[in-house]
Image: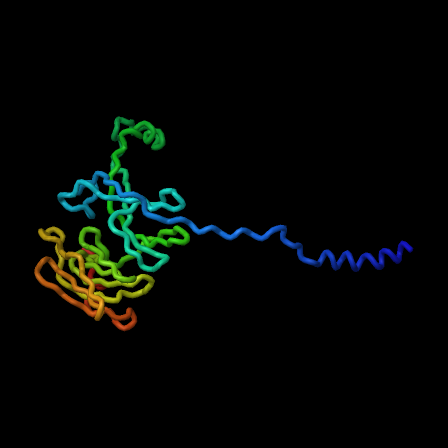
Length: 254
């Protein structure tokens, strides 16, 4: 009888062990994040604190917090541009420590952590305009938008759909280019030389905000208050880079 019970029960136990365990309860669906821009506030701002981004007469910068689930994720400045129902772009505002080592009377012989603790009340913060951010409304994730040949002192970005148009400065700092890029595209849609550039000899803004036209899709660049240059915008694949691009890549750094 004992042997019979072992023969009958053993296969049943093995079959039961092979069955997958049933979950006690279904996993709760993930809640979407709440992403929003907070109320506008003005902060002190100056050319000395932000030499590349500030105008000579600016004393205030309007900033807004990027809030994710009610918490500050980033600080932003300027108007945001909706790209799709899910994504938008906005420019980052950065708060930078402008204090020199030893400011506030802290001794240089102390370790850095101790010096920071002693001079905490004397730290001088300045605000600067930072790069553009692509923000995902669903996840709250913010990614820096890489704009080729972007120069904070020159490039004023005009957004349309997922296109960014601005005047760029070559790495050598000697040429001004009309740049149109498309988010996600690996190549510039437009890259044309506009004029020579000398940062030391600029009295007027080198380039004002470009202007978009919808039908046909065109972009107008206004150079140094002297001339307007207009380009038709087509797909990134249809426009090869111009001769000026090869010249820019070959130009040695000074």
